[in-house]
Length: 201
Image (cartoon, rainbow, N blue to C red; front, side, top):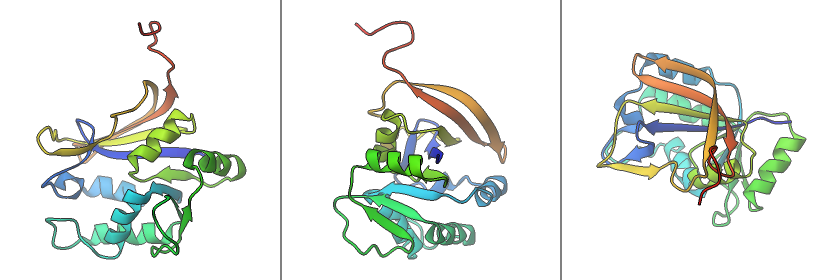
């Protein structure tokens, strides 16, 4: 049975990105980057929007406002290029140009359910907010990990991660601080049918 990790990088107020800010809000540090390099091999799951963005980065297209990638960013994209990737989309066309990427047009929830039941590889999401939301609702997520950067992007934040989520109880199974400012929290999620003190009126 495969294990599925939903993995997010966010501002403190739960945004995945923000207008005018550099990647990782410009606040990554050596401890965090070293930890990224130590992560176990995984098959990465993503939707079409994340595929387009990440494959562009891997091909050398820097984000708006950034002239070029730093060496550690290039190494991260090289590692992603080498890793197996499954892309769920009805809009992308084959063949996918990013190496080691497989296009799946079937229902993502059922496809991931089958992957989990028939395989032993570690599965992890990248970005893909709607995909992650669907997998969580379906009860397929074993671990839910968030790395929070110490910024609040109330004026410029985009991609609010938790909008549209069900109520979820989170049992903490790990936490860590990187570089004295970046906080990792990891949970086992339980989707709730109703608030724990009773059914909503």
